[in-house]
Length: 64
Image (cartoon, rainbow, N blue to C red):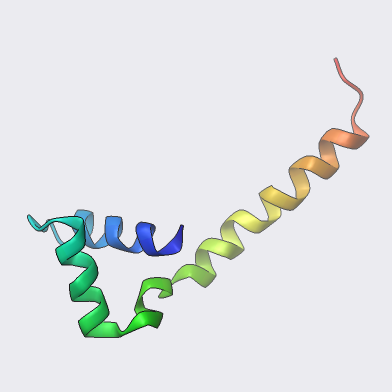
C-alpha cells in the first residue's frame, strides 16, 4: 500500500497533471526503489496502535 500512497501524495501535493504511471516513473528515477516507501515509518507509527489495540479492546469489552 505504501507505493500507491506515495504516488497519490505526489499527485495531490504537487498538483501534477501526469498519470499515475508517469508519477511512479518519476519517483523511481529521482529516489530509486526505496523512494516508494519514503515517509512510511510515520504512517506505521500512526496506524500501528490502532490496528493492534482495537482487536485487543474488542475481545475484552462486553458486547452491548
